[in-house]
Image (cartoon, rainbow, N blue to C red; front, side, top):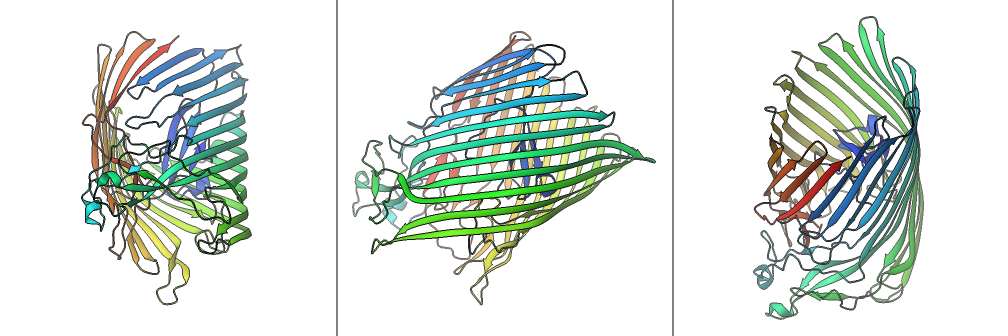
Length: 628
């Protein structure tokens, strides 16, 4: 998001959510995206914003809905949402989901899972409401290790035979029949809302969660021509990778919302406390037995066989254990000076304490001697994040604003991992993110169409780099992102809806140097992105058409111009469409068609540039929704 990773900035009901899991929407009321450094709201590590997933909770009205989907990958999905009122103050809600089947354009890959989310609410008709809810997800997938990039647009290799070779079949599977990805995720939550007075509300959330992942994946690495000019004899090396990881979280968050006036100034005050205990345990899995030579396995480049003999992935005795305890206090206030002007500010203080314990087991490639290294490190600090902004309304339907925000990312905040040196050094200073933004919002057509524009600069300081004279690692690197975003969302007419956006972003690395090269820009950051989705409703029919555009993404951006495999991800445009019909107020049928032009594009590219996962090819899904 805006040039920074948000991989560890996902929240559920305002509480941090970690764990190696593909999150599902079956139990979500809405998805909230907050852009810009948000340390004052979300705490440590929110350098570019965060994503909050709002859970479905029991309501005071009965409702029942089921949804069934089947697509061209022979993947079936069934979801249900049932809310039942027991009496005037008590209601229960059950959300459930099950899915089974393949993945578009890929052989043998599967996404199989089921989930259930029961909830009960007490006191819905009173000033104090209690919600007890949980979510339980089981995923049994066959993971995708991708395909080689050979022959694709932009592929590079110094071997002329490989450089001119054709592409592999995009459906080829280079994994093994034993590859799997099993995830168990459980979350229990108690939420209390109490209206202490007419303009005073207290909310308390207590949560315990655990996520476990067991994954074995066969990946692909280097190409091997085997001294042959016959492509049928070429191979690709494979690696066996394993993950045995457990994440736990225990959280308690209390928030007070207070609307009060001091003279002519109206205040919306939010104050709270948060206590977190997060833990991650990982058992090291490897195909190499300590004291033995590393095994090797290859697959035929153009005709891989998933039944080939491969080494087993087993624990090698190593492990990592990371734990972070956090205590935080926050305060926000929005001051309204009449109908035209608002001033808002917020501060958050986080005290964190991270402990890291690990054992690494390594085998010397020449002597086969085994080295076991024990690590026991800790880090703690107090973080002070804040933001300040002002908003002016020239008219009832328009506003202009300016804001500043500061966030901090301490070492180990993303993965509970500390080290003696580098970005996760226990002695390192937190990275500081400073964000400046101006923008405007206009509501047109009696408030039915919202136009937004924003320009921003974000700077992330205290990144590690190599001093060119001493060749020592120092925290003098900086990353700068300058961007502009434009969007339009709403109704053009009563039957014509539109959602459109375009963004331009320049990402620069300042004072970033390795021992051999200088990095001048950020990898994986497209300069231009755009999206358009428009629907038209008439006589129960709904038609939709949209497009998604992503500019080139650089993988190699240094003064060392040597390239390998795929120096960049080519840009692409993808078109999608839908057609739907509402039989009545209860039943509807939708047909979604993705990638109308069957554009081949890269979804993800590995750091080495030799392996990709392609985007979804032309495909279709049919969904039936019924309310009763």
